[in-house]
Length: 456
Ligand code: FAD
Image (cartoon, rainbow, N blue to C red; front, side, top):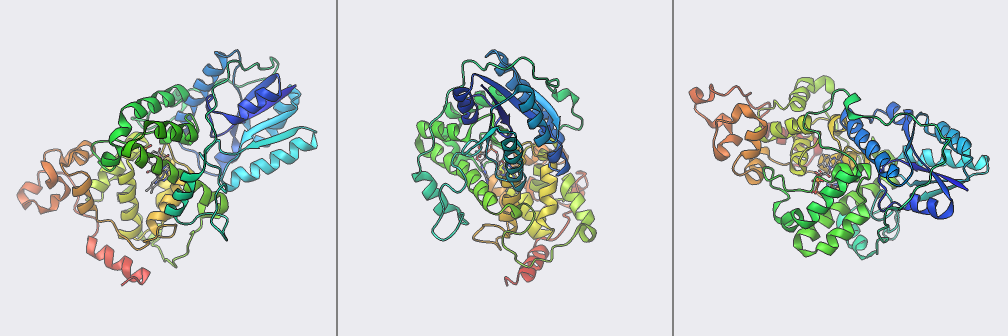
């Protein structure tokens, strides 16, 4: 008998429940990836993620070949392609991971009805993309947790499924057609400093992190210049490392660093369970605060300055330039730049979220949209009117100014924390630096936001 395993955001061989189940039930398996037109049409593709994806597919193919198999790649509509492959291979069943977005839910339903009509069985596996399946824990009277801390408490009490080893052999039927494996070299517009993708790279990073990096994570995760976070986010996004395996590994490592890290990975599950229950939160306010955000028409120049890293606030500009250069930004930078756009400039969070999704290699609908909503105060934040001050935050999380100097070379001649307030220099000294005046007055931005929100 034959099974098709459809890979989506789970591009790995280790700890892969759908592949495991398919190999157990059938003697031949078609590992399939579809370059889905539907995702392209939804506008959530980006060169950085396409390049990282190419690395992941190449590595998945290599891993499968080492086990006597290969990856089958197709392009087009996902349902048409899966059905075509199932017919070519005369497959009895399909295995895939459950997704959380509205698109993923619709894809599952369409695949189920199309394949079952042809007499093929469909199995959708939970807890492949997240450590705990969305909906596995719910508070009484609701279908999801809207507050993180009680979710984390319940999540921590649940036993996660065990880690599965990678299969030793993946026998693939010979006569199934495949397109060539893509290469990142074929993708245009990729950020210069983009990290490498693929399961081997993800596992290397995870094991190095568990051995060394994690120990001091509780103390250093907010240190912008120290760059001391795991950088596992793109691997978790593409599933080249498994969230469950990551949590198990961190728990085994133990200590306060690991505890703080597990809490952060739980945030990922938290946002996924919110989105699974409220798919519209990808575009609509989770909680409507009646904001009359300034639109792209009203604030076009300010939005452009924000995107380009020319706001005149050094820590904001550093973070926005890191995003363009690496396709990744430190979490503290994401918090500061998102707060600046939504609260200081009072621009719609959707404008910022779209820009992030264009560049972020880890950009995903659950984490990006819901973190943006969290910062904008339209999401699950219990302090929706909090505004982060970029100068105070810069001094606290980049006390020596090294992060700013790394990304804003115009200010490299300024020493220490003075780099956070170039406007305090004497005029003559200031003229030496080709760096803009602050785009807005922070007090003015704060007052506008408080008035708009009626927050006094
Ligand atoms: P670490 O600090 O090492 O954390 C480990 C893992 O925990 C991360 O890889 C990530 O999977 C998870 N995690 C950590 N913080 C969060 C968080 N706040 N929410 C959800 N998961 C978290 N993360 C994304 O993966 N994709 C996004 O598109 C994304 N957009 C964001 C947008 C904004 C405005 C903000 C404030 C945050 C966003 N984040 C997003 C969350 C967070 O910034 C990144 O996950 C983190 O910076 C990735 O770096 P790391 O892997 O080194 O994280």
